[in-house]
Length: 165
Image (cartoon, rainbow, N blue to C red):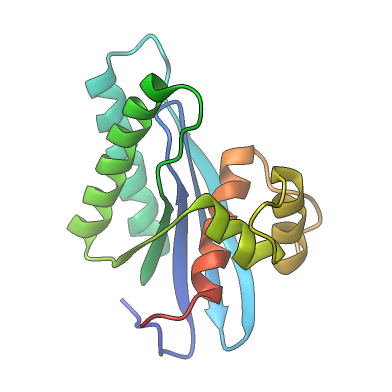
């Protein structure tokens, strides 16, 4: 896998979730960033949680094999109102981090405010502002859909704009 100091490298951004995990792959070449691909891994609520987590693992592993990112970035867990909804997200996030570690890809973690700051320049930016800036920065014709994939691309852009120490 290429290193960050290579002439070009890929970053996968991840927006973790049990129902929908967004992912987005960007390629960085010098100061240029381009979108490679994005999508969501979705699971159905009527399937047992363990099977849903295993489905996320298998699908995400396939994405890593196909796009060969050198680095990854994942959004940290955030919950404001419903603590119980954070548990399934945390489990999915754990599976994703484990999968990245198993594949040998360094994982960087960013808070929602850090992502907004890196993409928009304002830590309290709204979701629509972040998605529009992601569209502009990646030269896309429209805001990526579904929303979780757009958010994942924002995480990847944040990673690209944040120096490694």
